[in-house]
Image (cartoon, rainbow, N blue to C red):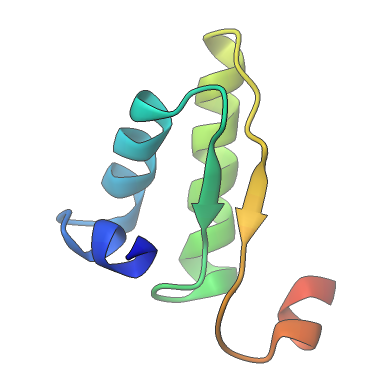
Length: 74
């Protein structure tokens, strides 16, 4: 269902922001819906910084597809 959430928005950053707004204290972002390294991680960092500015911390990011070993090291 997490990929469906991301894909329901016009872009990944908008989806991440909406998710963070709904779950500011338990935010884990799925970063591999589109391109993990080119957009997922950079967008997650943007949202994490925005959350921090509001007094919250992102819990983490999640990978559930692709070459998990490679992506987790990059």
